[in-house]
Structures are given as structure tokens and as C-alpha cells.
Image 1 (cartoon, rainbow, N blue to C red):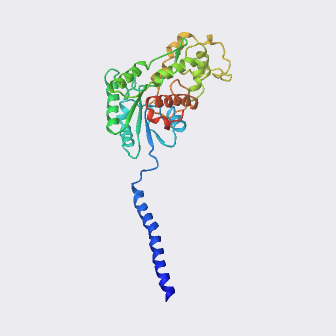
Image 2 (cartoon, one colour):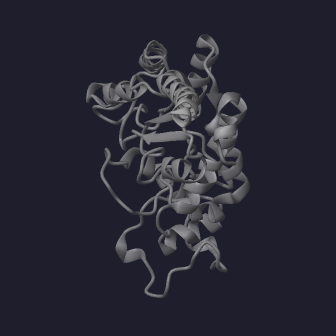
Length: 314
């Protein structure tokens, strides 16, 4: 009887003590729902033409090599698109859905057009003085309304030379993009200026390495003279093995300067609309070219959008 009288209070005390951690645990379980996630990722959406797109552009290299796991990278650029037909076909609406998707700390959209806004491209061309800047303004306004930060990107240079000087057929579209960025106070990546400086420094022969495929022999010979040429007829190709941009070049005198000058811009007017292709030209990028220009994009983006710097890989 006396033993029971001693054990009973001890048992009550033990049960009371045990209830304290249980209650604390229960309180803790109730509070976990209010705790913020360990991290909130950010997102970049790429919008533009083939010079950004999955095939032939810098976009794949940028997404694969220059973003951390805390930065989602979505490439919605499409070959053959201008500021007009990218919207008309519904691609911009898809981009807006990505911008509005939610769950991200910050969403940034890079917008690069110009190549297909040039004249002579039915269904794509826009008026440089009116339509092109108006289209860019509308993209900026709608991106902001979707809660994203728009970043304008000037068009990537083509790599055509005349007498050793890089041609600048995209300069007016680059300047129009700069003007809209200034007007609307939008961050600007001046890819046109930086790519022109880099390609001019490389020269016409070395710059051929940036393309998707090797140039044909006559194109390499012409580049040795300082003036690039477009496609050459099959019958003009020599039967010997093709010289490469990194090897010793034959004498360039075999390509008349007049012929080279007349065909220097063939590539600009003959680009197909979004057709998948792997060929040499002076516009699109192979792996080496994509790596070179993706690094420029990452560098410029870190400078102009400092909040993304910790999420970018140089």
C-alpha cells in the first residue's frame, strides 16, 4: 500500500513531463507551414530570332554554361522571326505565359530582334522608322505588365567583310534598339557593338570558325583577300581538299574582287524562315561561336542587372 502511494505521484510527474516535448513538437509542426522556402529561384526567358535560338544561336550555350541551378533559363527564340511575326504567330503569348507563371523571385526576359525586320523578307520585314521601335515598345510594356524585367539586346553582327572591314548592315536596327532602351529606361545589352568589335578583331578568315560548318574552298580563298563571298557554284570548287580557316591559305588573287563584293551580302537576303539547317553562313553560330557570344551576354547581363550576378557563371 505504501509502495503504491509512492509510485502513483511519480507516474503522474513522468506523464506530465513527457507531455511537454509532445506539445512543443505539435506546436512546431503547426508552424512549419508558415516558414518561407529555403530558396526562391529566378528565371530568364530568351525571346528573339535564330541568332538566339536552339539551333544556330547563342542561347543554348548561355542556358547550359552561364546560369546556376538557382536560375531557370527558357529559350523561346525561333528562327526567321521578327518583331512582327513572332507576335503574330503566337510565340509572344507563350513567352508571356512563362513570364506570368509565378513562383520565382525575379523573372527577366531578354528580347533580341533585327535580322528579320530588315527589308526584303515577306511576312517578316518591318518599317525601321515606325514599326520596329513601336513593336519593341509594346514588348517592353507587356513584359513589365506581366511582372517581368525586360532587357533589350541589339542584334548580333553578321560576319561579312569587304576589303578587310566588317560590313555593318544591322547598324540602324541596333541604334533603334538603343533608342528604345534609353526612352523607356530599359537595361540594354549592346551585343551588336561587342560582337562587331570581336569579329573585326578576328578578321574574315578566323571569324569563319564561328559558323556552324566549314566554309567551302572558294569562300576561304576569298576571305584571305579580305572580302567574303556568298555561296559558290559547285563547278567552281576545286577537286583538292578544302583549306580550313586555321590552315595556310592559297593566294587570294584567284577570286576577283568585283565578284566578291557583288556577292558579299547574298547571305543576308537568302536566310530561310526558321528552316532547320546545318550549313556555313555568315550569320548563324556553331558551338564555338555560341560559346563566344553567350559569354558576352552573361558578362553584360551581370553588369546591367546586378541582382542576377550571383546566379550567373562568367
